[in-house]
Each structure stands twice: as structure tokens, then as C-alpha cells.
Image 1 (cartoon, helix red, strand yellow):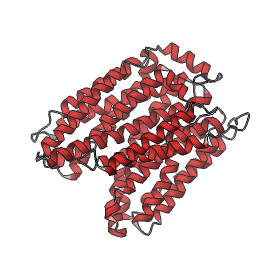
Image 2 (cartoon, one colour):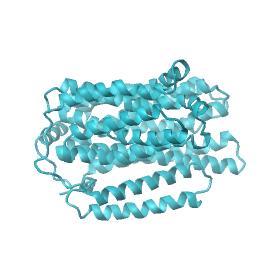
Image 3 (cartoon, helix red, strand yellow):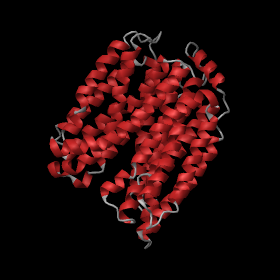
Image 4 (cartoon, helix red, strand yellow):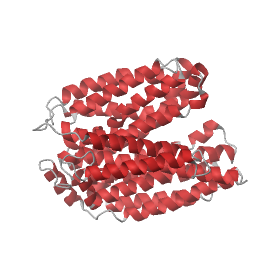
Length: 471
């Protein structure tokens, strides 16, 4: 696995940049896409289809990489992502674009989870902490650049190049990873894939996401269009859990949740994702509709969030080896809660510097938390479960963000229907975010108090000895 590590690292770097940019580059290209293809009525599904398939497949890709090795699943995921990108670029209608974005999301679901797992496999604790910090900051930086690239390509070349641009860089990543990981260890025996569990999980999470997306567009959570998919999801996911308890090689090893650090990381990821990515969707709306800022100025206010995440991801990676991870997670969640205290005091007199300051604190909080929790869960398990636990933490954060957007969107819709003005409605959104962020702060205290020395010993043993969690 160590052979060609530099080439592999570069290939993973390219892949993660592509995945991060794709989540934002399309947003600024879409107005031009609508002018070209029409289909305004299904506009939102261009984003929802990608979110749906990429979220559902995250845990699946991670587990498959544990069962089949990292190389083959990652290359397959990259190929699917590039095929979806190329097809999206040649779309002749909005319906086709939605389908091709769903294909693209199928591949995108593997890029971050398996990429971060590969880095964990390649490097020891000290080097790994620095590398994960750099990769987290690259994700943030690429997300920041994405809208600029999408706008430039749409204005000066063609909106289709917002998708085509992935292809040459993706092919380079495939070549680097295929060569650098050619010595990737294969399983000693042919694993048995839990097909029933796979189908139940995919259908259940898909139904859940569809229900949540609809909930965010409705002022009433009792609508059949909302409750129907959520009830179906509950039934399917309960059946999934029952199946997973019995199979020898589950899609999601439930035994992982016996570990305190995994429970803490998934709970914190869900709650912090719900608070931050839910409310951050409404910050530009507040700036435009309440303070009268332009769309450009409102979008620019979010820049400090990404910069705070980037800077403090690097800082937390360096502090991790000195302080352990619990203190950093608590500090990060204190920052997040502080940011929501500020959000909840916003009014029509809000200045742009004040808004950017609050958003910067929120970004710093997420940056302080992401890398320590990722390193902690990766160090707590062996090679045969590292992909699963890496993808699970990212899955719960993404699901949390989706729940947050839905709940806060429903709160805003309800208040507006009740006759409240936009400022009052958005104040309710931020108060909900404050409550959730306090829950995230409490979850930070569930993180076990581990020293850097303990992390190093756990990391060293997990490089050679598979974890027995869940067996």
C-alpha cells in the first residue's frame, strides 16, 4: 500500500477537488442551463438527484472498499462519476440532466469516503493528521472556487463545460491511482455481499431523503407527500437493521456503534451538520430580503465560513497530537453555538462585517471538529472496518444537513403562512439552529477523553490488526 503513495495522494487530491467543486460549480451554471434546456419546474431535482444518490451510496462505497480493497471500488466510482459528468454535458433536456446527475452522484458518493480512507491507510498518525487537515481545507477551498468556475464557464465558454471540465482531471486521477495502488491488498477470500441489506438500505434512505426534501418545501409536516415517504423509509430501515443483525458480512457493521467514539462522532456529525448546513442555506436569504444586499454581496458573506473551516482544519490537525481530540471537538462546538447566538440576534440593521464575523466563527467551529473526529474513528478500528467508519461519519453529517434544511425550511414556510414577515420567519430558523447547536455541544462531551499517545498506539495496532468490533 505504501508503494507509489505520492502518486496516490495526488490522485486522491484531484478526486476530492472534483467532488467538492461539483457540489457548487453547478449552482452558478443553472440559470444558463434553464435558458438553454427549459424545465424550470424540475430545476431543483438537478441538485436533489445528485444529493440523493451520492448520500445513499456513501456508506455502501466505504463498506465495499473494506471487503474488496480500496483500488477497484475507487476506480469504479471515479469512472461512474466521469461518465455521469460527460452525459450531463451532452444533455438535451432538463429531464436527461436530472438522470445524468443522478448517475454522477452514484460515483461521487465514493470520492470523499474512500479517498480519506486511502490516506488513512497510507500514513501513520502524525502524517495522517496533517494530510487529513490539508485535504479538508482543499475540500473547502474547492467549494469556494466552484461557483466562480461555474459562472465563468457559463458566461465565456458554455454551461456544458461545467461538467466536461471534470473529465480530463478525473482521467488523470484514475491513471495515478491505478498505477500507485497496483499493490493494493485483495481479500483472502471472496466476500459475500449482503444484497438484501443493500436493497433495503438504498430504498429506505432514498425514501427518507425524498420525504425530507418535500418537507422543506411545505409548511405542514402532515402532508401525505411528506409523511408517506418518511413512513416507508422507517419501515424499510427497520427491516434493514433486522437483516444486518443476522448476516455475516453486513453492509453497515452495527457492532461499530458499540464503540463510544463512533457513537459520539455520528451523533455530533448529525447534529452539527443539521445546525450548520441547515442554517447556512438561509444566511444569503437574510442578507438579500432583510438587509437589502445584492445577490453577489449575500453570497460573498459566506466566504468566511469556508475560510474559517479551511484554516482551523489545518490548526486542529496540528493541535490534535498535543491535546487529543475531545478538547478540540468541545471548542469547535462552543464556536458553533456562539455563532448561532449571533445569528439569532440579527435584524435589518445587520452590517456585512458583522455577518461575516459570525459566519467565520461558525466555519472555525466546523474546522476544529471535522479532522479530530475523523482521525479518532479511523484510529479506533482496523483496516477491515476503516472504510465503513469513515463513510458513516460523513453520511451522518450529510443526512443531518438535509434534515436541517428541511426542518428550518418548514419552520420558515409555516411562519410566512401565518403572516410573519421575512425577518421574523428567518429569526425562527436561526433559533431552531441555536437549539440544535446546543445539542451538538452536549454531544461533544460524549467524545472519550483520549490523549495523543493513546491515539498513536491505537493507530499503530490498527494498521496490522483488524478490529473485533461487531464480531
